[in-house]
Length: 222
Image: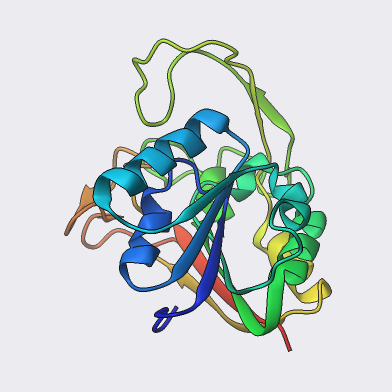
């Protein structure tokens, strides 16, 4: 991302804003946007409690342009666990491009789709069709943050967008891809065979074959 001080940054699908506020603490002028009113309320409370200036808006990501009054930004930021909730990546990329000011850039960090094609225990066996992008329906109480939580409306639908799909959508929207990085680490215990390292970083055990677990893309608007 580089130095974000003074940069206008919008974080799409920001949830309750912890990641958004980390950029504000580094000097960015941040806007967080999410479709969940309770999440945005929690984000606003968190910003107030921490004394960090930030703006939070409630809107569907596809309606981001109208939600910000056609304002443009130096940085559009999207991070882990966001794209799997979107059915139309081409439309998402178009929204991102419209939100960017000239010479602004998208920074996307996501879980690598190939890692979800492997078994959930060892990650050594292909158990899912990588080319099947969904939709995939599931259900049950709890959340990824608290599996024991009591929840309602538990039906969920996700999409596993291939790397090809994401890269093609970004390039097709008119952005120039500056880099695509693939990483051998992730940020939660995605499978039991992973080992925890500094902080919340998980990697395969020493000597085990490495696979891409996350990726990051930076793409600039000419």
